[in-house]
Length: 171
Image (cartoon, rainbow, N blue to C red):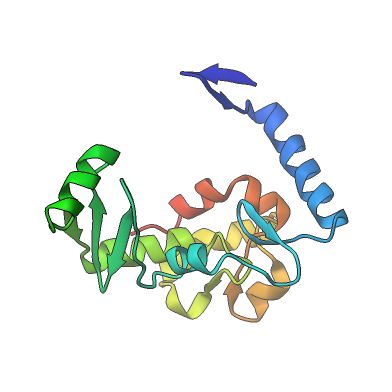
């Protein structure tokens, strides 16, 4: 591990075995992987986080919290005192917002869906995206049997290079 501005990062030769080891420990303890960096017992997945990953609407409450409603994303002021002042003045504490266009919404869907055990329906992909992913099926980074059933899902090895796989299908 090496420190970057106080944050521990993982050098790739070390990171892969650590990630595999963590997955094995969680699995042995009865936790099941359901999102790239999340495990849960007995299907007790975080409904709040699943809302992000599935592109649903959500409200964020508190300083710096983000919200998403029908294609508009907005976020609150970050500093707790500023947040408190806005609330006390009966003002919305929104710092800024953006309207997502169709390409942004689709890119986020791809980027976030691939992280889930359910993956992406292959029928939602275009021919170029399917061709770009086919090699990852052959290499074992995408689950072959799920691919045959119309889903692109990451294997454990695929989870290690998920960002690379996502770059192959972004618009």
